[in-house]
Amino acid sequence: MTQTPDTLIEYPSDFPIKIMGIMQDAFAQTMVEVVTRHDPTFHAGKMEMRPSSKGTYLSLTVTVRAISREQLDNLYRELTSHPMVKVVL
Image (tube, rainbow, N blue to C red; front, side):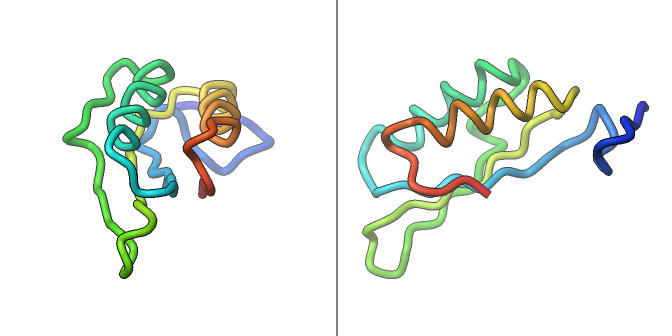
């Protein structure tokens, strides 16, 4: 395991990311496709889904296998720029 000076994250490690968007049929599947581009080992079984109390929004927690800061940065960039995504934490 390596640790780079500018981060406290050790690589490789499992790293949870929360993605929130408007509830719609293709949201979860689309996010699986986005995440898989950055972590080929990711699959839908590594995702938790929680609808908002009124069912307007869907929160997804995806756990990716983080192998580098660059990988996480690229994933965050793609998620935050995606039109279906409202918030990424």
